[in-house]
Image 1 (cartoon, rainbow over the protein chains, first blue to last red):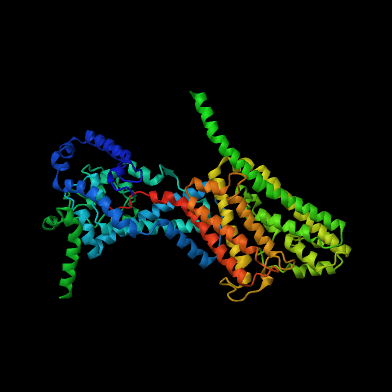
Image 2: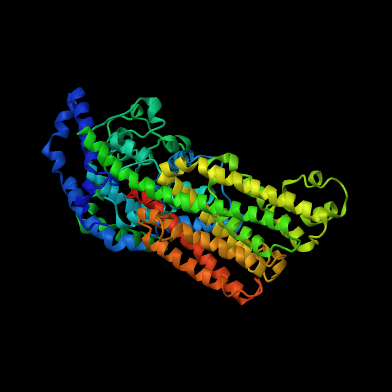
Length: 303
Length: 320
């Protein structure tokens, strides 16, 4: 992994890959052309140079070092998980091979399964980050952003990075292990520049606008299937943070009763309670305050 | 400009096609040709003499096991899926062909009609009749010729199949190498579990119940030979100096380290097979071989896992 997050802009596997940023800018400009009332806010210095935004920018660079030094050495790789899953299946059910699908059919099934299962686990980990008290202390870092910009995506506490790293390895490893067991070497992914084609298309279609003030919403019927940028912005509001946990797909929110459609939500206030915001105003705050808060709450609960 | 691009593309594509084609011709077609030739020689030997044609039978086993270890014809065309079962019933089904063959050979019905099942015409059936009956008996000899000619025909089907699908194999190195790796992984599993572990009492199924009668060719004492043939076929596939092979293909997706480890375990396993005495697969040497082939199988999986580079490029492992 690169030491500088500047490489993120050149890496197709990152949300801020330049093509994704460019596509989001184009979509945003079209949106603003059609909706002039949003231009003032989106072109204002107050938004882009807001202390919360500045903190996002600084933290974006610091987080690369944190990931390199702390997260990567700990997180087990998806390959290792896949190997273990495959070995476990062989020991439980013996060696088997499914020959009834072609190389391209297996590739299609694998690409789709990886995407869907990964999105499903994202939904649940994200939901648990909100619903379990001590996890919420870490996830609050992300929700402490007062204004949203594409780099807010990286305003994530290292503990959350770690958990999402494990989630990724376990989910991708599990799906890969099962497919390896059934199809062996036939598995492959439809990709663009090495990235799952489904993810690539979704990101290209403006995922960077999720963390922005472009309230782009979809038709109601689509918002029941795919999470729109507006739906994620609603998730970042104080009053609706327990809705719209989905990554790309809205179907998990729909199934598990946490979906909020854009048409049903009026004005929103981004962030967490005002009195809590003061605890996340510096990089040191962001990193250490969750631990302090958990410690204090633990002590309190003991008495 | 167009002409330049076309010539440039041809220079890139042709060497890849040529190297894949050479591999296919030398390994897939070459081994099938050897097996057909061995079957023909065995048929002739049965016709010409009343002695057990031990050498010819060993040649057949050796060449067939090499074909079987890298059998990808069923991946190229599903119609060829069952063909190996018509030739070889080791772990194929629970039929006791010995009882059936005894009944047929001791009976007096038309021998051609009596040997109506595919399992009656497998290499396993051939081994049993060759090593359990007197070749001076005309009925036994007729049975052996029917079986060996059937084997010859089946092997010829495989050879013709490979010839027919050469272009398909050569045209997509990526897909072809996946088929081949699958065949090698499957073969390494069966080698470890069925041909060594089950016999030596090292598998869960036969834990501490070693029995050499479970060995693939225990009647003729050619089980170690079969194992050696399989391992050498793996070597042909991943580490031959004569042509670009799967080892080179695997290096294409940056599996250098993994494929080197695989070659090391393969060499180690071949060396251990050489130590087996009297075709006995129940002792310490067999245990050593079991461990080595376990490592070999794991090494194949690790090479295979290298294809998972794409998995590490899934977007958004960061949170939301």
